[in-house]
Length: 146
Image (cartoon, rainbow, N blue to C red; front, top):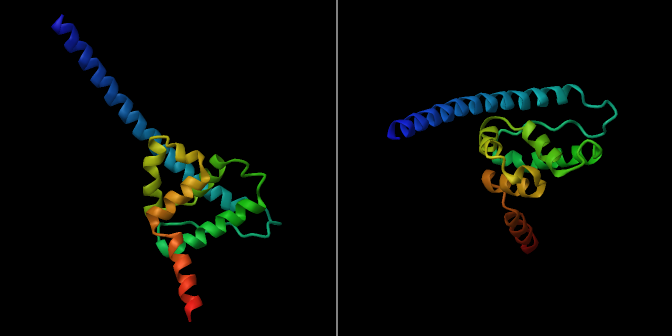
């Protein structure tokens, strides 16, 4: 009985290891596909689009407002391509590089519900990369004082 349990436990551990390796390989393939998709999207932008294709975002806090405005504007004029929150979040993810790309990987790995909620995803980006909406309001109030 004990030998059977040891064999079963060993088999489960081996299966777990194999699945972990397969999961790592799949995550790497997903990362490469997301990068390839972003590259292809840059090449296929419609010539008549009045809004330029957004630049990538590497996690630099000072660029976050510009990135959000660029992507929101692009999605607005191409609303038929971005018909739901999951598509919008996928588009943002396809434009992430460097630190920002590393930041999003855990959300993808755990298939987080935030990947289907555009507003929540933006809020999480703002929190992580240092954009506080309240600071903008405080700056406006200070300007009014002068």
